[in-house]
Image (cartoon, rainbow, N blue to C red; front, side, top):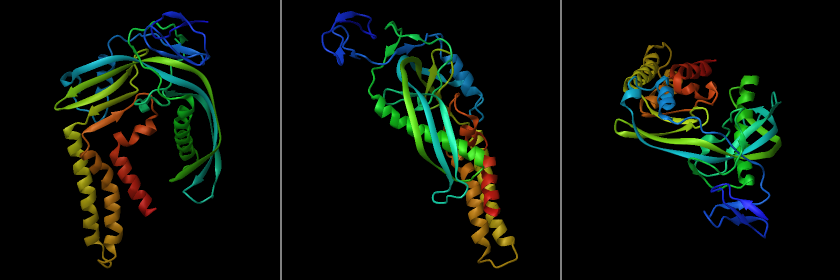
Length: 313
């Protein structure tokens, strides 16, 4: 039987079935494997969409676009398992309580990297158009699979559980949600070698990394510096919230032994989000994630006041 290597394009004869190795480049091929696809490379300069994306992050410095310096870039073709998933989870309020139990469902295509070190790409949505059969002709570096489809299913199950939990929180309006998954049916639809630019850049004394979609210019994952001014603003906000607890403890007319039990824990909870961001120098953002997933990175004051309302409600 004649086989064409998807890595170097060479053709050679094989007699056995299973996993064979290309005699020209050493690439391992599993005969009878599911359909293999790729997407065309359309983004030749990933630095422009990356800096534009970092610039609009609320916590990034105003000069990040022109003071950042590109350190390195590499075009990778990352293997992604493409699954069609049907899942149904049982949502409950809290860890033990069965009050208000309900069902949440999910059915859609999901991707899981077939290589280690790319967890940020789990669940990355592929473009609707442009997919084509993989012929082995690539411009960048093709990464060889290191995870089986069964291992990928385990990662996928955890990701789908997170999505079901988020859906339950939004639908049932519960503060604490746990989701069991009695139904999980992943069906492997194909393997996609997807073009991803891996970027490393420097701002000030620190290095940051990012991925840029080589097909349509989206940014699946990016680290960015957090503005010193915005970190100071968060510190001042956190300090004021913390000081307010001490002030309330002294100002309340009832027993001084009881007052700190309510006011000081409330101020600690309220000030923690802002103080945590005040001492964080590296932010993380993703263009394809839902805004609700990144909300805490942009509105620390909302989270602070949410803790206050929850404590006194």
